[in-house]
Image (cartoon, rainbow, N blue to C red; front, side, top):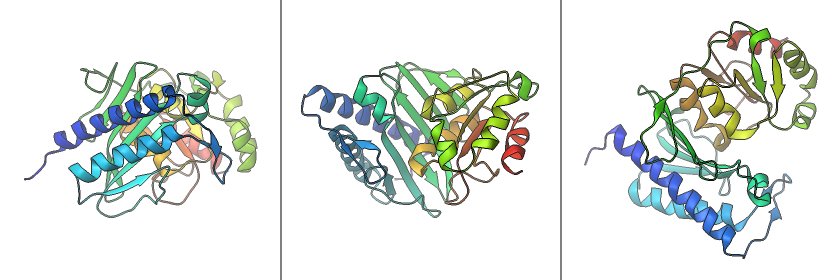
Length: 265
């Protein structure tokens, strides 16, 4: 049976719900131990259990597709259809009971993100997009959404920007460039992770920028920002899933070159 793109979007939305539901259930079970990965980031049974659940679901529904997840690893394959999943983006928040975390689901075809779903259940917020069909926000993956559009700021002096952890700029040797950018803007804050990029798509923020990311951090964000009329690249202006380059920048069309030029200096 030939599938249409709507089938893939519905599956992505279903996967997001399954992952979030599994994560919340495991956190509430009381059997919840936080361990550290080699890079020092936390992982919990909820991260692992949610990823296993959705991997089973995707392999059942799309047996010919590939799967890449934060907990099971893998690279953003440049050929074929690949589902890229982050079961809990914002694990540190999730562990502390801070509601700013989300499940990220992306379908990538031949290296290009086609579908992105970001579901933040404790914020009662879901953002999604399908290439060529616009970007939307609603209270849940099953709800009807409102179409999103990025804000076209007149320049950096009019821009509200956000990053994740400030120390990561120092670790990547890019602190001076980030400070140069921040000093030229209307306001800079640290909303972090998925949320800042989705707020760019909503037209609330103007720039969301990070110095280091993995494929599962960003694959779902690219179509959401781009279908809202924005640009989402690495800090050199190249495709963010190209397995080279540095970081991610989500901006409007009017600001993108101004931002990228600072990191190219």
